[in-house]
Length: 547
Image (cartoon, rainbow, N blue to C red; front, top):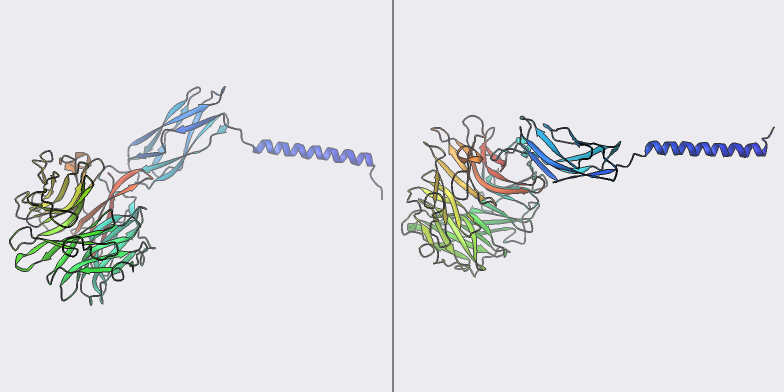
């Protein structure tokens, strides 16, 4: 067999090697993108727009020496209904205004991750992140929450909602009562929703927890909820204990919804003030971890009096408070009902006092020192009453202002009402009319505020219900007042939002409010919880509103 000449073979190998190098060099040149000779920046990392409106951002351009070409700004990933208007930063310019346009019918969106790029000189810049949100006007229901489905069934019959709280991670806990089995009757009901709505299936059973207090099927009714800094959940209300009637009831849950076995007796505590009915409606978690409940206790011929109990972190009664952890306060000398519905903690010079507010007949407020005795520097011997001179009324919520004043909200003769009290209990003349603000949501029927929260700017949100027309079928109401007690017209006509959730003439009512911060937007929205007629029974209602 013939063989190649050694010199020819060597030349062939050299030529092939040079050819391969040329191919590799050509391939690398085609694959390598040109390096941009500029970079871009945004004046902020978040943007919001309402349907039919625009959001603008400033795009900055930093150019390398000698690069003066125009740069096209590109936006990718905007939510449905939003578009970016064309932007070209002209040659030699170092900034431009980027406009994001929302269509008039654009749906509200959850915070959406968007990227912004610049393209010029045949090169594309590094993508910059931007969070974009399509939001509603102040007072609008946030239709991105829970996929616009505000109702969820709890038990097997009617569900009654009384409290709502927001966890540090943004998840929402709703408390109330309902029937989950015929054997246990009406039980505490606890339901957890994800930050943006929908049941949190990792909590309890499919997002729901029911708790009986071992009372043979008698009623257990939750009225208030709070979340501890460690994520444990406190729920307060009352439990029918048979021989002693209704007693204060308190339960603590671990973050997964199971009862905290290290609290009370297997996670539950009941407290009796006597053989009459004792019902808790309010819950306050002190900074030191102690827990205060307030409500009323039936004292025979004297009617029902304010009742408070304070517990240590393990569920035992705090012996340093009142009489063995319990306090009874007879507001009047008649046989009327006097019930505390809400609690707040004020601090003066490092010294705290507990304020309990409620009614019935008129607004009532009582201030207590840390040992449970009345603070006689507040009102008349520690008590404020007769604020409106009304026949029917009660304060259902209370907040503390930055000036350490108190704002109380509820109803006066079945109209929304609020008052502001100075530190000594006197009406603040700079609020409303001589310290009082009354809003008749309906001119001819009943309406009542059942909850109150205060925004960081001092504006006040009152939630509740109104009977529609001449009926006793209710709709949900949200009212915003300015810090001075006047109506906030920017929130809706007369500062009002009336929301018929249930179809037709079926009823729905707001019962509780909680503010929900969201660092992704960033914004604070308000959650309104209550109940509404579903397909056959009252179901859990949870809505989120833009502020």
